[in-house]
Image 1 (cartoon, rainbow, N blue to C red):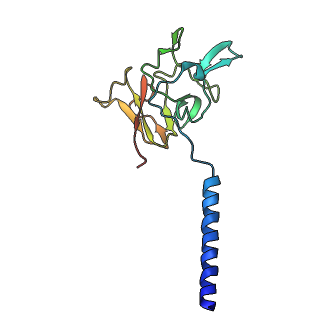
Image 2: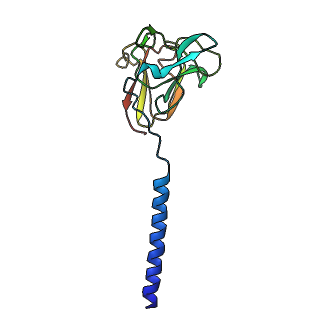
Image 3: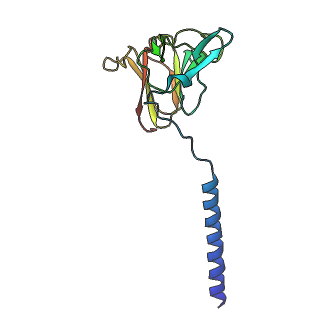
Length: 177
């Protein structure tokens, strides 16, 4: 009888521990719901009005939608731009009414207002399930001739062949290595 009682108590404790763990797991915040950067987004979510310059910029905050960043200087220095979708031509990014070059707009003033095309020296990819590739030419061209830099998920570095020669950026599904 004592043995059965001890077994019941042990089973009840084990059940309580399991239920507590399950409750903690269920209450824990979920991992970031990262958006798919391969999808063209509504252009309007990028726009931010720059009062100092009196113009609109595509200057989105780092978020689940914008998890790739080009930097004006090497080693993640200078101004930056957050990107969350493929860009066919960094010199001609369209919204519903006009096309304009994408400009560096965040961070220090060094490089702010300069075109991103052919001016990025480093990049960081915060995406978890997507690789980002910076291409030498518009239209995601240059990879076949070695003119592309691919960043794996959660990595960053100084750009190689596309340093200050970047014209388009695209994303592909991939896994952390």
